[in-house]
Structures are given as C-alpha cells and as structure tokens.
Image 1: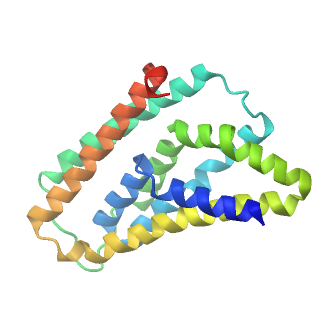
Image 2: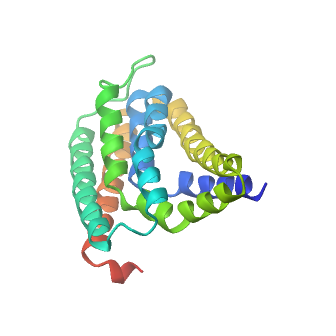
Length: 207
C-alpha cells in the first residue's frame, strides 16, 4: 500500500529531524531517564490532533500571518526553555539510578505547548499530510488511517529509540559531562527558538 510506505518514510524523516521537540526529548532523557524521554516522545499523539483536524478540514485555509505569529510565539517560548536549561546546567548533578524527572506533568505540558506553537506540524499537514490523507480517504478510509497510523508510529518510535539511547548512558556521566550535555541541550533549544522567530519575522529568507 503506497500510503503506508509514504507514512513510514515521512514519519522517520519527521522523527529524527532536529527541532524543539527532539531536543526536549533528549533533555528529558538526560534528566529523568528513558521513561521521562518516552513521555516527551509521545507528545505529538496529544498535541497534533487539533492540527490534523484543522488542516484536513480546511487545507490551505490558515492565513500566512497566523503561521508567522505561531512561529514567533513558539520561538520565544523555546528560547525561554533554553535559557532555563542553561541556568540549571551550571549546578546540575547527574541523576542517580532509579531517579525520575521531578515533574512529568510539567514536562509534558511544555512539550505540548512547544509542539502546538511550532509551525512545522501545521505546515506539514497543510502542505503534505492533508492532500495525501484526503486522496487516500477517497479510495478507502482504511488507506487514509493507515497513512496516519504509520506516520505517527515511526514519528514517535524514532524519538522513543533516541530516548532509550540517551537514558541508558546518562548514569555513566561525570558531573562535568552531565552539565556540558545539559548546557548543549539548552543552547540547541535557544538556537531552534531563534530560528523559529526569524522564520516568523522574515519567512521569505527561509523559503
């Protein structure tokens, strides 16, 4: 089924693409281990439903100005998260075996907000996902559901695999190494936020 293969391919590309959510998955895995990373990896299953519904029911109807506002707001929030991570990195200590993230609900909420304010899911479902989904639906609803299911299976699965790799090695880190990695996550978050802001303010420069 071509829709299934397309969903698997697009999901893998979206899952491993550097961005705010992927960086949050890495940061959560460093702080709280595999389970904390998995919670963040599953955020698209919570946050993408309104994106998919709006995009499928009104393909291309979202004005460019709204996407630009989303990009700027999301960028500012991601920069804030990066600065907070950098502050924490100055005195952070490697977690002990069995220690979990301090607040899973707060981490999930952060991930949901970041993903909703990130224009990438909106752009993907408007420009790519919705046309494929609707064309498959015209053939048979099962084909459309297969496309969406394959896409999110690989999207989430690739992030879960990364969370497992990062979480497995976090206890072997020295305090200095842990702080450097956490600080690098903060820098990466801030950089992603700056790019999102720039894309919102000057979209033509990134087209």
